Length: 324
Image 1 (cartoon, rainbow, N blue to C red):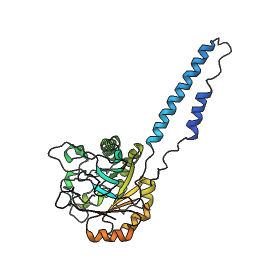
Image 2: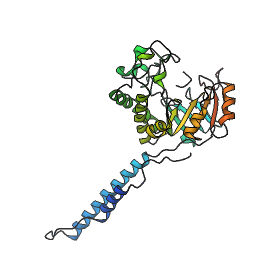
Image 3: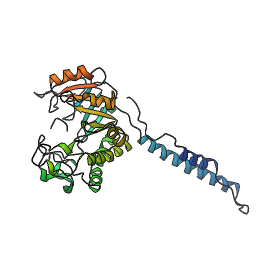
Image 4: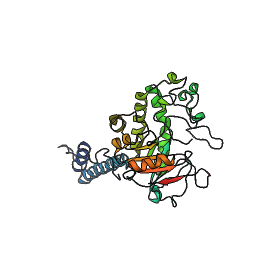
């Protein structure tokens, strides 16, 4: 849950898998023998061979496009990061070369040479907006997926859990999120963070805790679906918070590429993220004390930023930014 309201290319599919490449070579080099009684002219034979080569080239181009779509890059390690999900603003004064911005309203830095992460609230709704119509707001999600009976998030009013309790509902939810992830890719973002991964814990300690119809296993299954889709569009995917996941679940089953950790110094969780992701961690702190702690513990190797809790823009009376 957001507290608002390296340079490596992933090993995706191999660039030239043996089987497809052999097929392509056969198509280019072997137009096939003519029957003994076939009296086709040399021109006709040449036309057939040329058609085969053109078909092979078309297949090769299509295959190359699929391969490129399956490659993604992670954020540069220990770069200056800014959390701008509350609204875009220039990085000229902060020196940030990596940002996270809203999938619907944000614009990537990528066109300016930076690295941009796309914020998507995939496990909960956004609150309804008065002056804009977004697919991720409560009233636009498929009604059967919104767990309105639980009430909204105890900490973030207007956000409701998405029901991922069955395979059918996970598929339906993933299909709804696809338009958001496609929007990220089309806009030119480099990666995506799916917020509220730990939504099964959202009502812990409340009277409705036992009414949440799913748990960690269902969250892992759903995260796997939406991560696979994002990877297919060439986007790296961040694990957002959620120290309940094992390394195997995070890196191997789901396939997360890096982490965005909020308040890890507050909860003594920074080691979890660096043990799981090495220097592929972005830490966000919301107080001066926890920012100083995070800088001392992990600031030499990973990105650490101090932001105000509502991630406001410059000019706001509550705006705060610092980095180490």
